[in-house]
Structures are given as structure tokens and as C-alpha cells.
Amino acid sequence: MNSGGVDFTFFLMMGAIFAIFYGLVIRPQKKQQREREEFLKTAAKGDEVVTQGGIHGRVSAVVDDVLEIEVARVRGEKVKIRISLNKVDKLTKAGKANSTDKGEES
Image 1 (cartoon, one colour):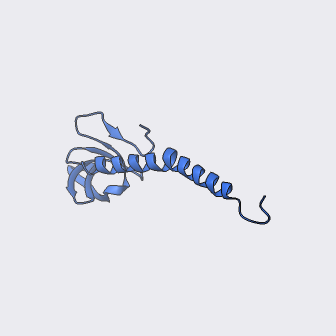
Image 2 (image 1 turned 90 degrees about the vertical axis):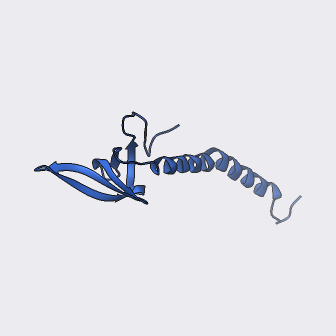
Image 3 (image 1 turned 45 degrees about the horizontal axis):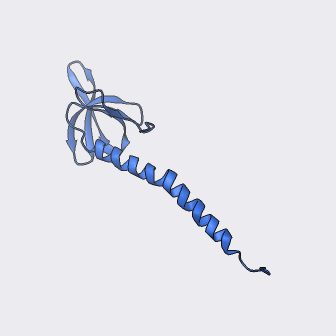
């Protein structure tokens, strides 16, 4: 019988709950995030992208973690913007229907 002491089973249960939470939620989410980052790093010229701000465009150049995307043509001139790779919400490879979404589940 404990008289004012800390019950060891409380810490054991809290540890078990954390282990279950880690195994079911945190670890799979980190794996999915890692796979997404690796997929986005394969962005190449001609791929279709949608930014987190909702801008649709086609990749015209890739330099490190910066994409230059063509978003429109005005009087025959291409309108291009530069965005950070981590602001890409969806990437569709050129000639394929394979894409990645922030909200997509595997």
C-alpha cells in the first residue's frame, strides 16, 4: 500500500500510451512526409504543379530548392514566377497521371 508515494503503474501506462501513439501516428506521418519530400525533389522541366496558394503552372527550370514555373502567356510572352519547392502542394509528372497531395493517404 502506497502512502502518499507515486504509483509506478501510472508511469508504466503513460509510457505504453506514448509508445502506441508513436507507432500509430507519429512514425507513419514522418515516413509519408519523407516520401513526399523525395518525390518533390524529382521535379523536372515540363511537370505540372499547383502551389499552396492555388497557382497552377508548368515547371520551366529547377535550381536547388527553387522552381521557376510558367503560369501564363501574355501577348506571346511567358509569365514565370519562382517558388520554393516546399510550397508545392501537388506535382504531376509530365506525361503521367501520378501525383502527390498534402492530404493524400497511402
